[in-house]
Every structure is written in structure tokens, then in C-alpha cells.
Length: 155
Image (cartoon, rainbow, N blue to C red; front, side, top):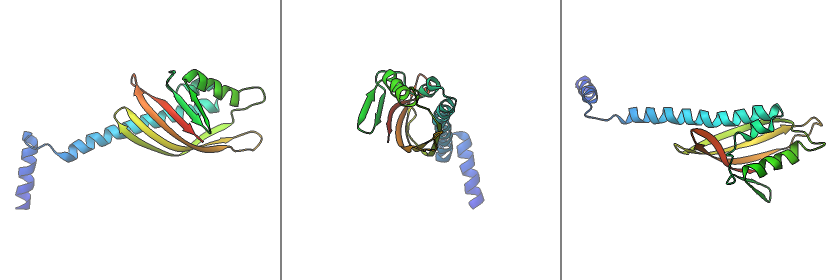
């Protein structure tokens, strides 16, 4: 009897009478994995650019818009240009260094097909042996087909 029920179910699926929930879940799961990988790739490219001393490459992960928001400590910086200048003053000005960056404990939460919430830790290793670091929370959106960070709250 069980075998007959399984065969009948397969036949109904083949005829398109029943839409298998597991097949839809597999498709959604595959899309989620691709999206997660695409978001993580943005962060990976940022780390690679930072570690080459390429601030412009690092900034390519951010939305190039006056509506970009970067928060750190008690300061809110608005806009891509202002965010780039903040990084430049802090890490490329006279006597400053960028150090070696790494991200850890990344947690990507998809909020839909075009938005993601990302949490993690950042860590710098400086030439003098100091190791500043902290936490970050990002909001990324798919804009023009590319994932971009639109909001960054770093501590």
C-alpha cells in the first residue's frame, strides 16, 4: 500500500497536479545560498583591498551615495565621500597606517531578495603590535545588480 501511495504521489507531481513544497524550498534555499555568498564576497573584497592599502577598492563595497550612513561611537557620517574622507584621515593621514584587516564571526541574515543584515567582528593588526577591533552591523542592498553596504554601524 505504501508503495502505491508513493507511486501515485510521484505521478501527480509529474502531471503537475501537486506543487511539491520541498522543491520550492530547495529553490529558495539555493537562492539564499547564492545571495549569502554574494554578500560575503563584498566583505571579502573589502578585506583584500584594505590589506593592499587600497582605500578606493575598500570603499567600492559601500553604496556611492550621499544617503550612505556610517556610525561609529557618537559620530554619524553621512555620504560616501564623507565616509571615505573619515577613513583616509584615520588610516592614511601622515603617521597613520591601515594595518591588516580581518573579519570574523560573520552572520548574514537575508531580509529579502535585495536586502541583508550582517553582523560580525573586525580586527586590525598594526605594525606597532596594537590590535584594535570591535563589532559591526551592516545593512546591504542589491543596487543595480550589485550588493552594496548602505548602512554601517561599527564600534
